[in-house]
Amino acid sequence: MARHCGAMATRIQARLNTVCSSHWLQDWHLSLGLSGARLTHAGAAERLQREYDAVVIGAGHNGLVAAAYLQQAGVRTAVLEKRHVLGGAAVTEEIVPGFKFSRASYLLSLLRPQIYAELELQRHGLRVLPRDPYSFTPLLEDSSPPRSLLLGHNMAQNQQQIAQFSQKDAQAYPEYEAFMGGMVSALDPLLDSPPVDTAALGKGSLLQQLRNLRALWPLLQAAGHQQPALVQQCSSHTTSPPPGLALGQQLPRYYEVLTAPISKILDQWFESEPLKATLATDAVIGAMTSPHTPGSGYVLLHHVMGELEGRRGAWGYVAGGMGALSQAIANAATARGAHIFAEKTVCHVLLGRDGRAQGVALQDGTEVRSKLVLSNASPQITFLELIPQKQLPKDFVQRIRQVDTRSPVTKINVAVDRLPSFLAAPNARDGQPLPHHQCSIHLNCENTHLLHQAFTEATHGHPSNRPMIELCIPSALDPGLAPQGCHVVSLFTQYTPSVLADGQSWDEQARNAYADRVFDCIEDYAPGFKASVIGRDILTPPDLERIFGLPGGNIFHGGMSLDQLYFARPAPSYSGYRSPIPGLYLCGSGAHPGGGVMGAAGRNAAQVALKDFRSF
Ligand SMILES: Cc1cc2nc3c(=O)[nH]c(=O)nc-3n(C[C@H](O)[C@H](O)[C@H](O)COP(=O)(O)OP(=O)(O)OC[C@H]3O[C@@H](n4cnc5c(N)ncnc54)[C@H](O)[C@@H]3O)c2cc1C
Image 1 (cartoon, rainbow, N blue to C red):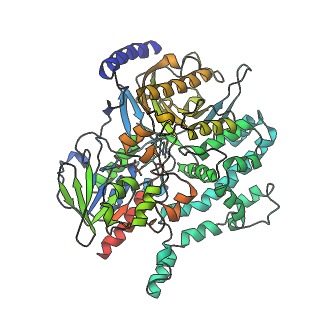
Image 2: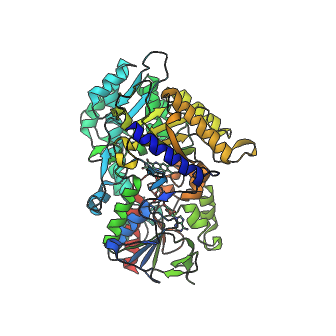
Image 3: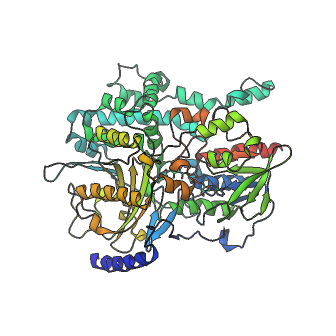
């Protein structure tokens, strides 16, 4: 098998050398399946019409979700996507011939359970590959073999693993999981509806006021959520709460988790560094923050808030890569009658004399009229590029300009001709995947101090010398992604500032130097990795901005800090998907509840737009 892949690798390398000798794979790729000017259901040839009820700018997964719900409600909807491939940051692309990469996002968990069911995604082709175990943290130690921490869904096995480092932590772990799970359950109702419109409270007729008060319900549910089982589980850790205590009474502790540095919270529970650092990765992933930054606890919650096949906090791969999820959503939308077009760049929103959105104008001059315009593009693109500034309130424009879009992430997609063999868990002789190969593999994650140091370097404009690396090998569970015996490796790395110190730019030399540094680190844990590399695709923050339209390269369309969430996403008083332009709605990650492949913003925005449409 290795020989098979070796011969393939030589052919691929020769082809790569001719195709992309100067610019290392950046602008050359084969997209998977969805390229072309339009996507239609059952092969029907649809033409872009000049008028729809609704136009969605951008076919990220949120835009596709919004389109599916609007069309389902009888609103004739078209989606116009700039790129040749649908899905935004949830795409599969064949960057290296024969290797299909989830080029940006790569793991599924956060997608709202209602969306699976209501859009019948399984029927439309979605197949999820759950992972168990899911987290592997090998250590660099002199002992042979070095220790590692493997976590999965079996609590007894997790405790055994943790006990290698601390018996006390092994005992505390189930309580910690229950505590976090309780908090996630409490926040869950907030995700599926618009944030409370405080401006509307107390206004209008009595009936309207009562209707507006209904919006408070999810917030009240969150604050007063009852979970006796959790309280029982937590009872040994807290000061003896009475049985049946409502989660609401735990608010002070939960408030602390939301606002404190995650290192402070983890120090309250645990003493072993590999465990704390592994858990802390979820609190800083995608964020220009350190585990010592206040508010990092919320980012952790955001990453454990999902579920897969009914299992809270579980993450899995999508068979065929993340593009297969976007394709399933697109299939659901087109099956309901929506029209979806790729390679259609919207260059501005059309406004009527009354200031209402009336449709969009495309780069090629085509105008498409509609009563509703939903933008899946970032708030920055939507309000700073597609709308004349003079049409917007000055303070709103200022707020959008102020959104913190700093991003630490460089994603590197790597084609390899064999599985990495870790010193801490060497490969079997047959080279077949072992359980840890399906995990998120955390490197440079021995302790939280390392993560903080990596962050600090970036704050001075330097890419981290020992970056935090999350290495995933989706082909370990989904062999069809790569030629036989070969694999696709996803490296989610941070911290890389988007603007480098000393006037340096992210030119080819800087990008390659950083990727080489990352590969050196992997080589320390898994000798032979560098020799296995066939091709690589380096996406620094400016690349993520250029290719995917992510502002500053920020994977969430804007940081998930407390000042940029809920009431304040994307700006205070505009968190309900409506915008200062009547008829224009934000339906992407820049809106509540933020980034990740959740679909919540798309679904919620569609509901708000639909309500307005019906009142026209
Ligand atoms: C490297 C990386 C790794 C990630 N990993 C994960 C992960 O594993 N799991 C997870 O849940 N989340 C992950 N995320 C986050 C997640 O992918 C995003 O938050 C989410 O996909 C954003 O979806 P969206 O639909 O809101 O917007 P986007 O996916 O950004 O879609 C916006 C769309 O609008 C289009 N557009 C913009 N301007 C125009 C225009 N003028 N005309 C027409 N179209 C336009 C864009 O081309 C794009 O297709 C990751 C993100 C990145 C970048």
